[in-house]
Amino acid sequence: MRALGHPSVVVLCAIALASLLPSPLHAQQNTPPYFTSGTIIIPPIDENTPEGSPINEGNPVVAMDDEGDPLTYLIPDGSINSNLFSINNSSFGVLFVRTGALLDREVYKTGIEVRVRADDGMPHDVPLPETSVFVFLKDLNDNPPSFVNFLSPISVPENFNVGNEVVQVEATDPDAAANGQVEYSLEENGLGLFRINPTTGSIILNKSLDYETAQSHIIRVVAKDRGDDIVNGSSMNRNEELRILVLDFDDEPPVFSQPSYAVAVLENLTLGDNVLTVSARDGDTGIDTPVTYTITAGNEAIGSPPQPSFSINATLGDITVAAASGLDREQVPQYVLDVTATEDTGRQTTVKVTVTLVDVNDNTPMFDQLLYSANVSENAAQGSTVLTLTASDPDHGIHGDFTFILTQDTSTNTSVPFSITHDEGNGALLVDGTLDFDLGQQVYQFQVLAVEDIATQPRTGTASVLV
Image 1 (cartoon, rainbow, N blue to C red):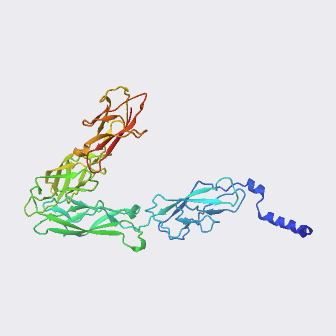
Image 2 (image 1 turned 120 degrees about the vertical axis):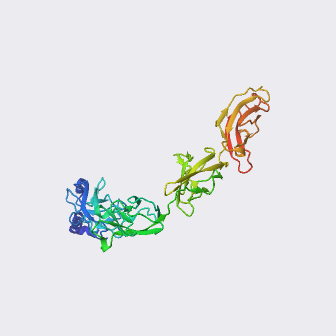
Image 3 (image 1 turned 60 degrees about the vertical axis):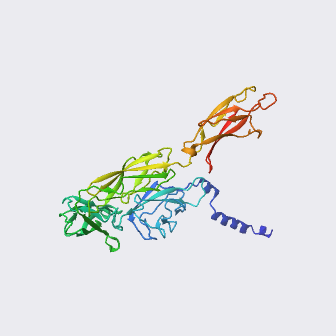
């Protein structure tokens, strides 16, 4: 209580404390800062800009505050692309490339959006303002061309016409503009036998081939981009060796190893499972022209959406299941495929391939109704028909055979005064006991089971009955 003798100290302390805190009136009337633009576009920067580099020193992010409160800027954690940039000095809206960030124009082709928030340090009833900052990357020639589906060797008959296209190669480059434009050339062109279109990649026969002189030729195909701002001085080109086999002229179509093929497979084969392999060879003696296999007829589409049931390896002749839903004997029990073997010369031979599906117990008996109901007189004669049930199982043979069985009454767990017949999927529910409305049970509730006759893992369908 001795402090009461020093009121000046108390007053000075109160004044000092008041000077450190915003006045209630100022906090109450304070408005949040705001951005004058909904989006800010930063001048483009080079892709692969090193981590730690500032990207907008000459164009910092700036917000306004009507009360002149000091502002700080931040990139909210977890916001879009917050892993790429940071604001090292929060008092200035300068963005820096975050440690570990890789700015790749081929990844961010449409630019990078970053959210920046302005904070005046005052309490507000509304969220603090944010603006979108868009950063666009300038392309550098940092990717070489890459060949697409480059196949080697390829085969060409010796009577191939001069001026015709032997093969077309393709290379792509993800860089932009000239950096991504590809031109083609040949480093080794097989004694001048071949030339290439520098724009399309089409390789043309320039001189006649002679099987007796040379059975194969090797050329080196070069793909080079047209950019001149090469990163690190590395050459932005790619080359591949193309081997061209010269085939002796032939005039006979391919010959299959069998005049026809037949196979039986389980219907539960799934996508990619092997069905059968066909094989064909060149019909000419001493000539081994490669053949290409295709399924040209009989390949019925199944499933939803419909898909061809089978595919064939064009080189090996392996026929496999192609439908994602697998096969289904209940949909298509047998296929008769036309498989065609085609030589590079265009000569063809077609063979019949019969695929028969063997049934698998993959369907459960189904009633045509889930609930059957009927009324019966208490004095109905024994053997009288109360109602008729129908069930079916689309499986084949024993997999589709089933028997009807009655369960106990579901409310009393006692046997019901009924029996059931079975005639090709139809079951007649018959009176088979005493019915007494006054002294007995007035309502019977039970189930009818359709149990498959197969001994191993039989399937069971169920329907409810109310009498």
